[in-house]
Length: 380
Image 1 (cartoon, rainbow, N blue to C red):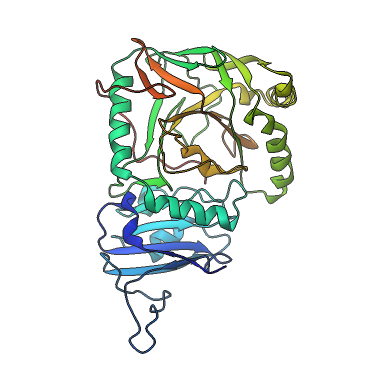
Image 2 (cartoon, rainbow, N blue to C red; image 1 turned 60 degrees about the vertical axis):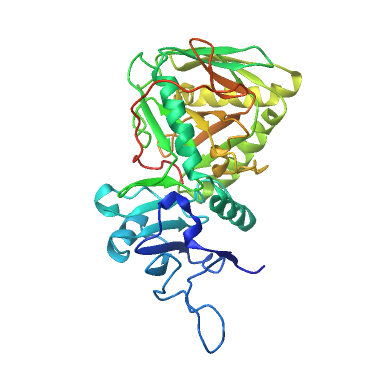
């Protein structure tokens, strides 16, 4: 399969091309991507070597680096990447911890989540192509509208219009953190790639606090859609990760209802006989490790350029359908062995006056709200 040809200037997530564009890949996947550096060898008519800095379209140079096994992404960036760089990290099979603010400096970083779930080369190629088509400015407008509506409503409701379940979320109760992985990166920011996710968590997104809760979340939530099972560093967890994903796969077509009180799962009910195997697996998970009972994250995918990859695929979390998609997060690695995300494309997020923010119902613009846009990216 020939390398995927990419033009760095196509990735609007970084803002206007300037300075250095740096691509960081794993050793095994260095040949997966071909960067259009804009520099030509006049003798052969072919692109100049991408192992040395070249002049790029809009960038003063294009740089490629390999992340050696055992080296932290932040360490490589701090010591090898110019301070003005726009950095894209694509390292399938390697779990990438978020660089510290000191390590990142003024650089802008986008990371394809390609280590915590088993992405194939074709999956990687698909999401790279998709990112080049992402409407980053559109994401910023959607995010602004989202936070305006949410900030103007002290009570939100997550409704599944098919099953009729409702869960109320009073985001003014207790502590919670709003996160934004969308829009144009600023200096020192890092985001997932492709971008397009908003969320609210019980504490800082990268630090699991067992006692933290989304205290204002009560009621019934319907799980019906693709599950995602993230693991951490230990490759030995891969077999159990795949087994758990397959056990939860009935949720693609059959729904389970979660019964929530003060941000914690108190019970669950299969809505159909076909959902029973997934319900049994979830019940076992909650019993074996009660930390999974905490609704750690309410997420909202807003990337309408992506399609669902029918597999255990981390970047599916940004999937926004046509009008945004609610998703749910349980656990966070490495505090819990796995981190689970559930896409709920039938659900809608609705304000207290009945206005739909996203999902199956159409949103309307109002209000303003503070949110974090430069937090760590969480699972990669």
